Amino acid sequence: MYPRFVIDLTEVAKIAIPSFIAFYVLWRQLIRNRQMQAEGTFFSLLNSIRSLVANTEGSITQAKSDAYSMYPDNKGKGVEYFSKANNELQNRLMKALGDKMVNLAISANEKDAKGVSEIHQMAKDTYNDFFRDHIAELAHYYRFTFNAITFVDTHPDIPKRKKEQYIKFIQSQMSDSELQLLYYNGIGQHGKKYYDLIEKYNFLENITTSGNKGMIEFLENFYPKSSFRL
Image 1: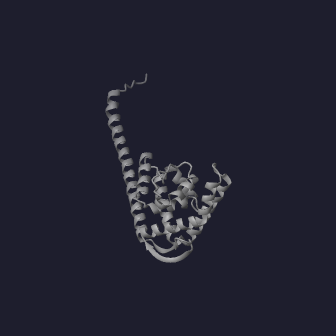
Image 2: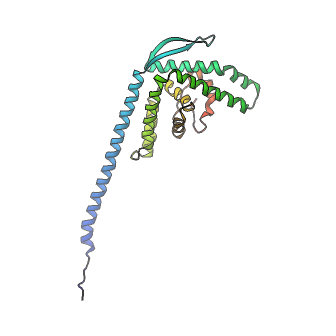
Image 3: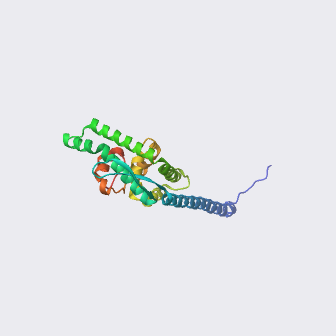
């Protein structure tokens, strides 16, 4: 006859429960360590972006206020460069689209879909030309900013709530001119992946438009999922 084994559940519990608690604490600590590591990397990327902005320097092409004829004017560095570059872009857009926007607004009470589509394409073409002229200054900035947003978006150890906070933090560090340039970059020739992230996180919700409010409002349906506080 085989011997009988009696399992004392109390004794098993004395061993299993502390082991489980120790494992759980270790597991939570591991997750926390990975989250802190991701957070450190994020803020390092953020600092690198601001450093990149501060050291960006390039020539600006400005428009004469009466004729919108383009001519080399001066250079800008840091936030000043982005401000002047954005002014140049707005001048180019106004030169290309100004009359058509007015005519379309006056010609019909309902939006002319074909006319709007034509204006949107002209806006894209105008931005693409602008970007080609500033590719040396802006391409690296766009790539670095995109990589920082992608890092947050895809990192498995950053909770969704934190992802949204970090993305908003990236946005809050940007000047209005940077946000306006990103607005057009998203619909530009090389901005498709950027566009998707802008829509996913409503990245440009706090964009301010100051002197070019009408232009942004007219083109705002470039981003149908985003809510702009114009």
